Length: 83
Image (cartoon, rainbow, N blue to C red; front, side):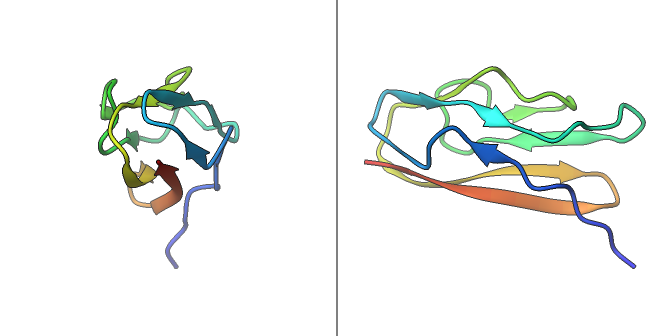
């Protein structure tokens, strides 16, 4: 049986170019390997840590999916529209 990461939420799902969002994540265990993926972000686009960065900023308009991958447990994602 495959386990999936707990879902996370964003402070907003629609922002203007140059805007930022914060991530509200569930409590994550230090015993697993986590990777946060932020394609198209102005800041770090891959973060290997249980805690996400304080905020993620996007300079370019587009539709993005922010993701949390947990080794052996799958991937969960949240859409973000920058327009």
